[in-house]
Image (cartoon, rainbow, N blue to C red):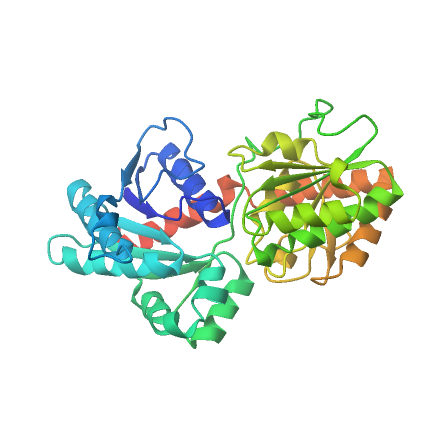
Length: 374
């Protein structure tokens, strides 16, 4: 089957999942075409049957364009690629603007090509952007006009139905997945991310407000008072400066490493004792799943789709958003108890197997066959 994929190519869960999905589909014999303004950050190197088509933005400085109409350029490129390569399905990730541009491309192609559009909802496209008054109507329209819609968690499906009153939209839940060949424990050969004797805590995100990165620092500061520890912060974004200032004000800056954006994080997670994800909400929590697959239990918020990934007290720790003190206390208790930590680590690895690419990707393949009749 020939499949087009449009996603945000930048650092974040939706782009990571979309790219990993395309790579997995190609490995299963499908032809995959990524259509976006930059090569997705996880599309590293050559993959057989994977192609990238860049959306032309060279007119961005045209004097009549105060704001470059990227959505129109993207729709045009989607139409062009679909027609040239006879795509069967255009799978777009994030409702705004990708589902809207896919609808435009599909309309332009009639009657030359019967292109099917599948939209996968990832979170803030529904919970934040889509519910803004200026985007509400077009987000609802794009969902209703898609041939099929998926959400990455039951929580997101229910939130979409509540927010847009589309209980008859037939949204399917297909959770995010992890490549267990890349994300796996590394035995005793763990990378040295901190000085000898230090417990290693890690956080990975795009450092947006919803990630509550200052809480990451506060949780770590409590742990650091109780034992030698190092915090590894991977990613970048608008709240990085605040996180650095918080580390300085709490006197832990020397034990916090800000590594910036990294394309590959499995080796970091393999050297992690505890992963911290105190987000205000998460539609799923891909970063937590990848950490669990590498054997790092998570301290996370009991919010959004995270309880669908983490079972409190079994394979991780859940506390309400904003409860840095409780998260810090439970993190200390876990790190002080080697037997409990080992049991939680084993349970986290086992839980991740339920979200393996081998189990989840065939669900998408089944959707493609269903929507195309092929």
